Image (cartoon, rainbow, N blue to C red):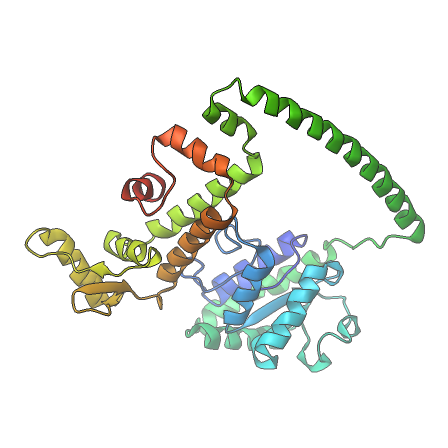
Amino acid sequence: MSHASADGEYVEQFVSNVLQLGCDLDLENGDLFYTSGADTGVPPGADLMSYVRKQVGAANLVVALITPTYLTRPICMAELGAAWGMVGDDKLFPLLAPGMKRGDLDGILPSLLIRFSNERDALDQLHERVGNAVGHHSGTPTWGRHVRKWERAVDDLAATLPAPQVASVADLEKLEEKVTQSDQVIDDMERQIAELEQQLSAVSSLKDPVDVARAILPTDHRNRFDALVAQAYKALQRLRPIVREAVRWDVLGSEMPWPDAFEDQGTHRDAKKAYDDGELLGGSADDTLVPDYGFAKVSAARDALQELMTFLRKAAEPELFEVFQAEYGMPLDLKKRQVWDTLLTS
């Protein structure tokens, strides 16, 4: 679902009454993606635009809640145009807030596509479209009860939507002046930073190398690493251990061998159960297993791990590896089982 983050209460009430309760969508099963939802939005560390673009491309239906603020957000407008271009008329369902005009979207969407969020026939059509998209429909009594809650609230909610402010020419001139002044301050700060770096270089020879690495490692760099680890850990915890192990083998470039029934009967039994359930598939050899990435939670775990490994391979500062070695007494290499267990399964 596409919306402006500033329209919080309006969006939350729509999601709750119309989509979640009215259409019986299960957020935990991934029936709905919208960016401001704590459990349904963009994962920590993910690139916003590329992640949203991926979700839009994979969606069976894109619902756009268009408000006055929405029209002033370049990201929202780009998201709307991209959604129409990617999924077409049959998978895009825009809803204007009460009081807006269809002409507000001239040049962006055909007028025949546009409905209002307080029109019952449009909401009933949305209910049908959502049910077709997710493969199940809520009953008429359930839908009617919850959509009426939205109908009673929508006009009042729309009246509280923030009115976007449009800057005047004078405001823009003042802003440009402030930017110029800020550039001068930045130049002064950069000179101070260069001096501090020279001082740090002189001190480094007198300190333990690991202490120096820890001191100069950028905070945002370590935060990025921690966020990617947390994202991968959360995704892996959703999998049963044997499937988690198969994903580990796969992202490291191999196929997991079938556990030996005589040496580890319990693990072999778990593998057989996962194979029978379809989360594991036969590999390229008779004695290997691979994950089935048709399961969303399995593919999510793989994607999170690949993002972490790409960061370590291409973007990680050398100091990060030194700090990890100092803190854990082992090299930061996910191919090593002890490192994997320390970061991602313990």
